[in-house]
Image (tube, rainbow, N blue to C red; front, top):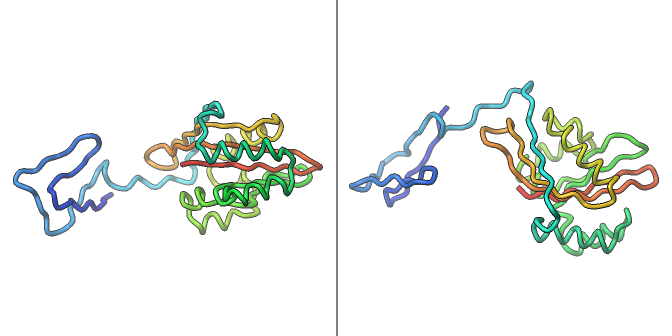
Length: 196
């Protein structure tokens, strides 16, 4: 494993929380190569399970745009065009992840917004549209989130969590999500506002 770090012209290299000072200033003519723990993380094997830690948070800890989504839901609590239109007018639909199901089937990806596209990439996001959420490809992660989605749909109140996924990368993937859900007329819908 190796990675490339280009040292700044000041000769200072920031590593972790400390600063390595070179005297006289070190100005390499080529990029420095550092291996070991500073290199790329090892690739995750497909058969490795991901551990997910989910901690419930009070809604008052939500980011402003997550809280705005809750405010819109309180004004338009029905599963319909009122909520969708208000989200679009506020520009929040671009930040949402929308899952749906019909007639008791599994939740499927209906819309994948900018935060998830930045994290997973457009190709992966596009490939997931219409597919069941439980088949997202990460053992443990999809199942843990499914329980949260069900609570948002059946509980009648938004759910706000701090989530840490261990095993996807060399360091945990940490984010918050605010979940709003509905069950109406055989349809189930979840809107997730995710902040990485």
